[in-house]
Picture 1: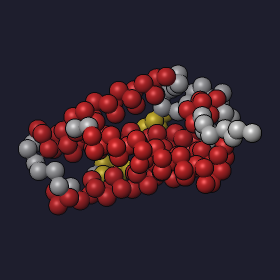
Picture 2: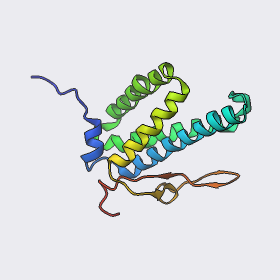
Picture 3: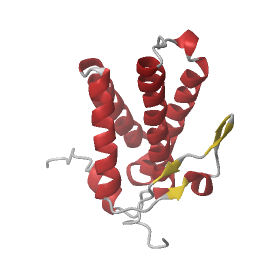
Length: 163
Protein backbone atom coordinates (compact mmCIF):
# COMPACT_ATOMS: atom_id res chain seq x y z
CA UNK A 1 0.00 0.00 0.00
CA UNK A 2 1.51 3.27 -1.07
CA UNK A 3 0.06 6.41 0.41
CA UNK A 4 -0.42 9.40 -1.85
CA UNK A 5 1.69 12.32 -0.66
CA UNK A 6 1.09 14.79 -3.50
CA UNK A 7 -1.46 17.33 -2.28
CA UNK A 8 -2.18 18.60 -5.84
CA UNK A 9 -2.89 22.07 -4.45
CA UNK A 10 -2.78 23.91 -7.77
CA UNK A 11 -5.10 21.37 -9.43
CA UNK A 12 -7.55 21.58 -6.52
CA UNK A 13 -7.56 25.37 -6.56
CA UNK A 14 -8.40 25.33 -10.26
CA UNK A 15 -10.90 22.46 -10.37
CA UNK A 16 -12.18 21.41 -6.95
CA UNK A 17 -15.62 22.89 -6.17
CA UNK A 18 -14.97 22.54 -2.42
CA UNK A 19 -12.33 25.30 -2.51
CA UNK A 20 -13.89 28.46 -1.13
CA UNK A 21 -13.27 30.89 -3.95
CA UNK A 22 -14.62 33.89 -2.04
CA UNK A 23 -11.93 33.40 0.60
CA UNK A 24 -9.36 32.72 -2.11
CA UNK A 25 -10.24 36.04 -3.78
CA UNK A 26 -9.71 37.86 -0.48
CA UNK A 27 -6.31 36.19 -0.06
CA UNK A 28 -5.34 37.08 -3.61
CA UNK A 29 -6.42 40.69 -3.06
CA UNK A 30 -4.38 40.90 0.13
CA UNK A 31 -1.35 39.48 -1.71
CA UNK A 32 -1.71 42.04 -4.48
CA UNK A 33 -2.06 44.81 -1.87
CA UNK A 34 1.15 43.61 -0.18
CA UNK A 35 2.95 43.78 -3.53
CA UNK A 36 1.61 47.28 -4.16
CA UNK A 37 2.61 48.49 -0.71
CA UNK A 38 6.04 46.87 -1.04
CA UNK A 39 6.54 48.49 -4.44
CA UNK A 40 5.46 51.90 -3.15
CA UNK A 41 7.78 51.81 -0.16
CA UNK A 42 10.82 50.29 -1.87
CA UNK A 43 10.61 51.77 -5.35
CA UNK A 44 8.87 55.12 -4.97
CA UNK A 45 9.84 56.23 -1.47
CA UNK A 46 13.14 54.35 -1.31
CA UNK A 47 14.59 54.74 -4.80
CA UNK A 48 12.89 57.83 -6.22
CA UNK A 49 12.64 59.98 -3.08
CA UNK A 50 15.86 58.53 -1.59
CA UNK A 51 14.19 57.86 1.76
CA UNK A 52 15.82 55.18 3.89
CA UNK A 53 13.58 52.11 4.06
CA UNK A 54 13.41 51.25 7.74
CA UNK A 55 10.74 50.77 10.39
CA UNK A 56 11.06 54.27 11.86
CA UNK A 57 10.26 55.88 8.49
CA UNK A 58 7.42 53.49 7.55
CA UNK A 59 5.63 52.44 10.73
CA UNK A 60 2.12 52.54 9.27
CA UNK A 61 3.21 50.74 6.08
CA UNK A 62 4.82 48.04 8.22
CA UNK A 63 1.66 47.61 10.30
CA UNK A 64 -0.54 47.49 7.19
CA UNK A 65 1.77 44.86 5.73
CA UNK A 66 1.48 42.74 8.88
CA UNK A 67 -2.31 43.09 8.75
CA UNK A 68 -2.40 42.12 5.06
CA UNK A 69 -0.14 39.11 5.67
CA UNK A 70 -2.47 37.92 8.43
CA UNK A 71 -5.49 38.52 6.19
CA UNK A 72 -3.96 36.56 3.32
CA UNK A 73 -2.91 33.73 5.64
CA UNK A 74 -6.39 33.41 7.12
CA UNK A 75 -8.08 33.78 3.73
CA UNK A 76 -5.99 31.12 2.00
CA UNK A 77 -6.41 28.80 5.00
CA UNK A 78 -10.18 29.26 4.91
CA UNK A 79 -10.18 28.66 1.15
CA UNK A 80 -8.22 25.40 1.39
CA UNK A 81 -9.57 23.94 4.63
CA UNK A 82 -12.80 22.55 3.09
CA UNK A 83 -10.63 20.37 0.81
CA UNK A 84 -7.67 19.53 3.06
CA UNK A 85 -9.01 20.01 6.57
CA UNK A 86 -7.56 22.23 9.28
CA UNK A 87 -4.16 20.59 9.77
CA UNK A 88 -3.23 19.85 6.13
CA UNK A 89 -4.13 23.35 5.01
CA UNK A 90 -1.82 24.75 7.72
CA UNK A 91 0.94 22.40 6.54
CA UNK A 92 0.46 23.67 2.98
CA UNK A 93 0.57 27.31 4.10
CA UNK A 94 3.66 26.80 6.28
CA UNK A 95 5.37 24.78 3.56
CA UNK A 96 4.75 27.46 0.96
CA UNK A 97 5.67 30.30 3.31
CA UNK A 98 8.91 28.83 4.63
CA UNK A 99 9.79 26.58 1.70
CA UNK A 100 9.20 29.08 -1.10
CA UNK A 101 8.58 32.67 0.00
CA UNK A 102 11.24 33.07 2.68
CA UNK A 103 13.84 31.16 0.65
CA UNK A 104 13.18 33.39 -2.36
CA UNK A 105 13.33 36.53 -0.19
CA UNK A 106 16.74 35.48 1.15
CA UNK A 107 18.30 34.47 -2.18
CA UNK A 108 16.82 36.95 -4.69
CA UNK A 109 17.64 40.68 -4.61
CA UNK A 110 14.76 43.12 -4.07
CA UNK A 111 14.56 44.25 -7.72
CA UNK A 112 14.30 40.58 -8.76
CA UNK A 113 11.62 39.89 -6.15
CA UNK A 114 9.52 42.76 -7.47
CA UNK A 115 9.90 41.59 -11.07
CA UNK A 116 9.14 37.95 -10.28
CA UNK A 117 6.13 38.79 -8.10
CA UNK A 118 4.56 40.98 -10.81
CA UNK A 119 5.16 38.33 -13.47
CA UNK A 120 3.79 35.50 -11.31
CA UNK A 121 0.72 37.45 -10.16
CA UNK A 122 0.00 38.44 -13.77
CA UNK A 123 0.42 34.84 -14.91
CA UNK A 124 -1.74 33.50 -12.09
CA UNK A 125 -4.45 36.10 -12.65
CA UNK A 126 -4.67 35.61 -16.41
CA UNK A 127 -4.10 31.86 -16.37
CA UNK A 128 -7.47 31.22 -14.74
CA UNK A 129 -9.50 33.42 -17.17
CA UNK A 130 -10.90 35.86 -14.64
CA UNK A 131 -12.67 39.21 -14.47
CA UNK A 132 -12.07 42.32 -12.32
CA UNK A 133 -14.23 43.20 -9.31
CA UNK A 134 -13.75 45.25 -6.21
CA UNK A 135 -12.96 43.22 -3.12
CA UNK A 136 -14.92 45.74 -1.11
CA UNK A 137 -18.06 44.11 -2.51
CA UNK A 138 -16.73 40.56 -2.24
CA UNK A 139 -15.09 40.58 1.21
CA UNK A 140 -17.00 43.36 2.95
CA UNK A 141 -13.93 45.36 3.90
CA UNK A 142 -11.99 48.31 2.60
CA UNK A 143 -8.66 49.83 3.47
CA UNK A 144 -8.47 53.55 4.07
CA UNK A 145 -5.29 55.59 4.15
CA UNK A 146 -6.28 59.24 3.93
CA UNK A 147 -8.78 58.85 1.14
CA UNK A 148 -10.31 55.39 0.90
CA UNK A 149 -8.25 52.98 -1.17
CA UNK A 150 -10.26 50.07 -2.50
CA UNK A 151 -8.42 46.80 -2.81
CA UNK A 152 -9.23 44.80 -5.91
CA UNK A 153 -8.72 41.28 -7.11
CA UNK A 154 -9.50 39.15 -10.07
CA UNK A 155 -12.03 36.56 -8.93
CA UNK A 156 -11.85 33.07 -10.27
CA UNK A 157 -14.42 33.18 -13.08
CA UNK A 158 -13.44 29.66 -14.10
CA UNK A 159 -14.89 28.26 -10.90
CA UNK A 160 -17.77 30.57 -10.29
CA UNK A 161 -20.61 30.42 -12.82
CA UNK A 162 -22.51 33.26 -11.16
CA UNK A 163 -20.38 35.92 -12.90
